[in-house]
Image (cartoon, rainbow, N blue to C red):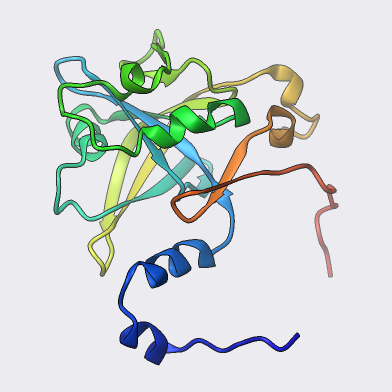
Length: 204
């Protein structure tokens, strides 16, 4: 089957949600996670993100993309004030509640309570984990980078990880497929995935 070409002319002529969905799904499937924060007065915030990226292992750095701050962003504001947040992987049974966190709730309303998920506090930090998440981590804010379209790359350093030891391979790799995690494409499409194969370190 011949592939059809789409160019700048196409999305300049037809400026509607079609192209928003087109480009949101163009990059393929990626991790879908819940980011937990707490306000200075202790209100727990929870929001779904699908832009998590590994930035380094020593120190352990993870980044995520935050949409433009032209409207209130509770996650961003809490991170700047408390310098702490959690990242929680989403299992298949959590997907409906996780997606619902993308709704616009009032600033004084906790998404945890609104969607039926449970905040779990660490002895070492104040940002809430999601109790139902099978793999979760606590991070401290390190830096942010403004991107040309108004989005921001938020960089954090991992301080704590909670997972089942049975997921660990001898070389330290985590068997993420064993926990039936969800991946996403775009804003509304959720996918399950399974392990395919593990290859050796490639050499010429």
